[in-house]
Image (cartoon, rainbow over all chains, first blue to last red; front, side, top):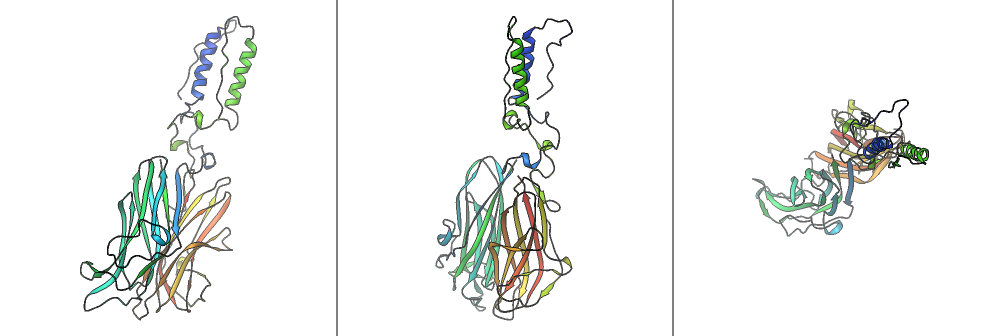
Length: 208
Length: 202
């Protein structure tokens, strides 16, 4: 709101014309009733307590402690269409109230059944698992592949997208396959099984 | 939020004093303590100039990161199930602290990463612990990372990550640190680590 000047300054002895009183007051009331802005507020004066919760950042937690066993006969991406025992993580309810930067972070733990025994030096191959994070179907992060020499370990996935207001889908998938040492090409299904254990993730909507 | 209601004056009106008083009362109500609210402010009328420092987010040091690194630290055997603090040599315990202002409920996202090497076939578990006085610590569960080294002499170094979200209450200091436990009394060496706290105030 900018400066507002009175239409009439009353002098001693004036007969007050109510029309100017009405005009000036209504003009000020019109500004207070929905048009105040940073010009009316002192700099650096609004503290944390005056700001509503989640105004700038909204954090939602996801995860599961239920083990997920991928189909070890499959050598394509899987696990991103279910939760708990039916998948790694599949979120279809992450709604952004306003346009924001969506920061997704995910930690998961996995373990191999064969204790590092899958590698065959003569064939130059070994079992491995790879992970990826998708937002609205687009890959934003990939990790691995990790050979079964890492008997039991954790992986961190993180990605950011500029998200428009609306509902967004977030998925975490794995690809378990036997890999060739050279170029990590897929040689076929794994010899041993990998299990995805405890996993948790957070979606951070960073607004304005 | 209060809106101002103007009682118009009309020439020759015999109730002028009451109308003026009603208008002034309306101004007092609209601009009284705590009366001005979101509906008094025009859309997109605020920007960062009106916000005080740390109103939206607080960082422990620098922009979002308080890394703690150190040289190698070899820790002795630990009984299974008992967690010990990860102390990385001269860097001291991997610990950060943050105080929440009164009246606020801040959102903490705590992330830790450690690189370690353990002896054969060892199960190592790393967790994040929390305290309000840096003396009494409790584990934040269920997220924890676990490593198992290979049952051979060629033990690869592992990198593990832990992450926890915590809603803190106002006027309280919070401290976070990493702790670990191993199976079978094995020896674990922590090489490097990072622990940082992001305080998303609003």
